Length: 232
Length: 232
Image (cartoon, rainbow over all chains, first blue to last red; front, side, top):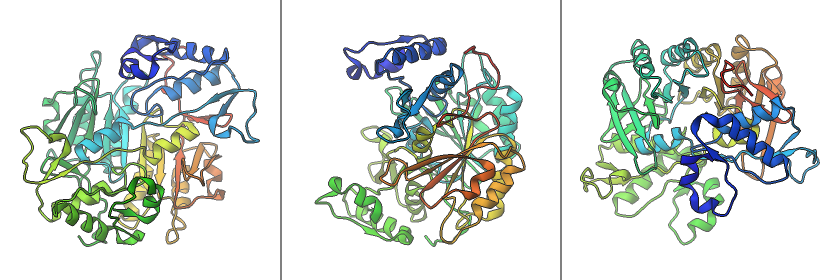
């Protein structure tokens, strides 16, 4: 089960399998179908891109099991006395999250404390997002922005930029990664002050440096420490 | 090049290779040796556990190149006109970070905005760490704590617990993952109020739920949205 684009990326792996697939907006229906398939006794995999546990389908799948009061057991209980034996066995398989893939392409922006914030206000009110941007900008986190822009939300990234500029210099390095590790991959390092001029789309992850983040050549680097405990 | 424990985990992969290895505290010396090996014309891999870009060696390696003013090129420039051809070619290979592996074992605690904070005050002053704990607790982030305890730092986790309790209920779910995906793996879900009674060591990652995080059976779940835009 998965969004069409993701299943197409792994076609050789799913050949000969029954596929449950549909457009982006029918997520709930697809997860419902996957759960029903599993309840009917078949093994069913829900496929996400990146890591299924980070802003992705693992949460929705478990939420729906909970709302339906289904008995579920974690896969780590398999062959142990803890396994109820009566429930669906659910395993979340971690993957490389977009924040990890993007950071690797940029250099090392996440060597120190960071926060991940989605700019999508579809399921979260904008005032909550705004409070999170302020709190983490002020406390000097590296900030990773997920869902910076979509067709419906054109201005959230610029609003975020203006909020962060209240606490950080315009020269702060910002990494912009589109389609990490895919055919359309593009990687750019700009400054916070110029962020609004950059190409950003739905497949983009944005990395805002903290006060110590530097660029060196084509790399973005956040040093590990504030002190010079170790001598380089 | 790598810390002994990590190289031992991948022995079959490094058979017949020259190994640069030493104890935990000589990180800088080992990275120096790795860079010198690469400058001498050999391909050299620096091995971390988890993701090398998240609180790990990618940052130190790049920092040291910068301090030595070495010419470096990102591997993504290979075979493109952007490659200077004159510098060391550096590639950061992403891996599954501890926060991703731990989240997968717990269920789906990271389906919404989260912050990663290291409690190690070796390279970061405690007042900075404290400000970050306060900011993210108040702005309702799921909080992932790295380096919660070591032989030298016995009380930082309890101090963090007390700070977060000022903003969150004692019943808030907390996931404790030791040695994710390794032989000594252990996974526990406790409440924030009881966190200080749990076994936590250097190989532990701690996941503090946000105000919406629930437990269901043996799973920890953070719902995706605050509204009920989608009907389950």
